[in-house]
Structures are given as structure tokens and as C-alpha cells.
Image (cartoon, rainbow, N blue to C red; front, side, top):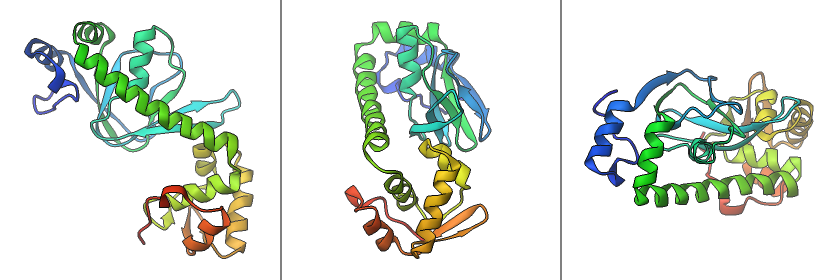
Length: 224
């Protein structure tokens, strides 16, 4: 691997373990759309060097619900919990963009984890953070209507122009494409958005926000 990469746990490790990771860490490329881990594998732990990966669950009918995303220098705590519990992954991990990832085998990581209390504490904190992310998704799915979920999804994008098909939005939110299409047409009819092939534009964010009953935390804001 490249000697220039600083694995996220290095600051917590003894020199011998930093050396071990430098020797054993595997760097690989994952083009956008690549399934990195699936529900049948537990191959080790991974960290994101470059790009964005998405963690999601997949139903028997092929419906997806996104749990959270991982960005540069994030460690996938789901793969760690799989390793520690010796259980198959209960979610899928896919490259959202072209990614560079670092992976460490189970046997190497388990030894480091067992002999380093600081690593155990750090990973427990990260797992708690991810649990909060997952619980937020559960709340959205269980207690909020689809109009609110789709509206919030649009308002939380970094730009008013959203490059996504109806099917891609449906996968993101774990619903049917037809449901998304009906709701987007409703938003368009009310003057909140304009629709075109493969993209849409939010033209009245204030009106859309009001129509879904507000947006806690104010959203991330949008730039043209």
C-alpha cells in the first residue's frame, strides 16, 4: 500500500501495530455502482480514502432503503460489528461515486482490537453515531408521510438542480417509482419544482418547505 495513507485508527495504535497495518492494508479502486460488501460476506473492515459509499438494506422484492453514507476517512462500523459478532452482514455497501478504499483482513484487525482499549472505545463511539443515523431513518419511514420524505430529500440536496431519475429517488427512499412520480408531479403542479428527463429543479424551496410542514434544522441549504 501507499506509505502516504494515514489509516484513521493510527493515532490510537502502538508503533508495532501501525507498522502491521502499513504492511497488511490493501488499497483498491471501486468504480461507482460497485457492491463492496453484501449480506453474505464478512471479509474484513474498510475505510474510505476517496469518494462516497452508501450503506443500505435490500428487501426480497428489490426495494432499497439508504441507512447512511460514508465519506473520506470514515471507517465502516457495520463491517466491524459483523467481524466482532461473527455474523453475516445485514446490509449492503455500494460505491456511490468512484472510490478508493482501504481494507484490513479479519485476522489482522481482530488482534489489534483485542489488545488496544483505545480502539475499542473509539469504535463503540462510532457505532453509537451510526445507530443514531439508522434510528433517524427508521423514524422517517415509520412516522412521516411520503410527501414529507420526498420533499425533505429534495430540499437537503446541495443544489436546487437534482440529477436523479424517479427510480433512483425511489431506491434512495425505499419506495416504488410510481409513488415518487406521482408526488413529483404534484410538487410540479403546485409550482415547487420543474421536471425534465433525468433531473429536476426546485424553484420554490420556501413553498415546498411549507407544504411538507417545515424542515427541522433548516436543512443544508441549496445553491443554484
